[in-house]
Length: 135
Image 1 (cartoon, helix red, strand yellow):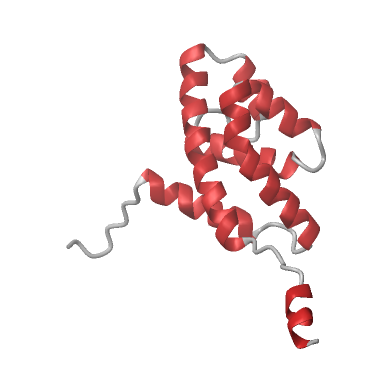
Image 2: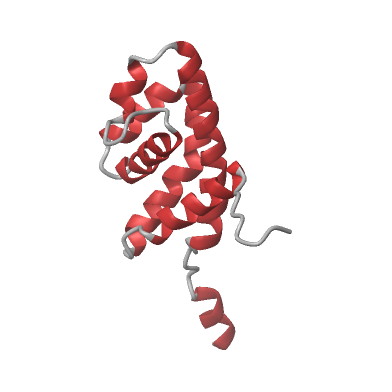
């Protein structure tokens, strides 16, 4: 094995990106739970509505905007849109082949995001069951 050679697969890059994005989320439970909920719905939205309508929806609402920002960063990182540009604005003007590739890439990222939020953002269970056992 060659020492110092750091070659990552695309899957590793996606996983690493998702972990970093979730670590950078605000620490408030409510915001993290909303992010988790919106990430869970993302793949179904894309499949049923398409990438551009999904991006428009996620960009338009304050509670879904953090997920949109994550997708925007990834599209910039992968070169589908220019640095410091908006995904929705740029993808509307791209040809269908680029849009199709971007959609495939975002679906792959969405799967990693779903896996990551399930692990990293824990839902707090009500302690009612423990209280009942003690009584």
